Length: 287
Ligand SMILES: [Zn+2]
Image 1 (cartoon, protein in one colour):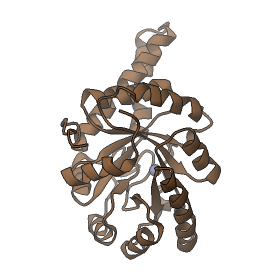
Image 2: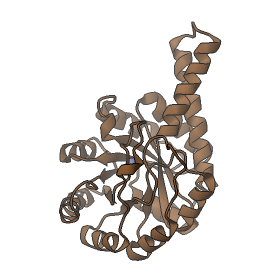
Image 3: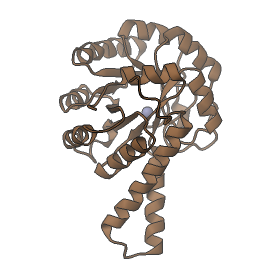
């Protein structure tokens, strides 16, 4: 199976009441771990690279590797740019074969966010690439462990309806009380707001800052229209802990073993998340 964009993948999730996990890779080891987790559960998966991680990765090489690794994958895989903020990052991702991009104009005034998102949708769609946008602002920065939920700005449902109609985006990231990074206190998701956003937009909605949200809240948000959930912080923490433990047990552990311990931790968390998001039931025949 070749790489797919988000459209059929998220439609299937929406129709069948689950959410697809979107996991950030930062190197080949994490990429392989994410794919192993999804394949074992026979679940579709979104592998993302955040623009903020560009200093760590060579996205052209990773995209090339992704295409090779997924050629015979038994599950649909999307390669997605997470939090693209510059046009150059979005162009670079598309040129290297990403099937989906996020343009994050959430810090811009509404009209400017609409204009810039609509322009990106036009050229991305011409290339068969799906587009996620963000309205309102999910606090904290993707890929950073520092969390500042206080700079969140909740999504306005009526503005969301207007935004989706005027831009033609395929998926919308909403700010309903989640935040990137480690939560200082338990997040309170605004489910009533989520329901109103869903009514106004009727497209797949995306929950950012999925690490650390209680399982029951995840299920409640899926019931109200969330079809894609982003996870990075827990993968990073899990890999970090696994490496610490492995080195504590054996300080002279060879480098390949260190990498394997990090990869196994990521794979395990990916599988837990996929199950928690209601996926991984092998229900892929009609995709
Ligand atoms: Zn995010």
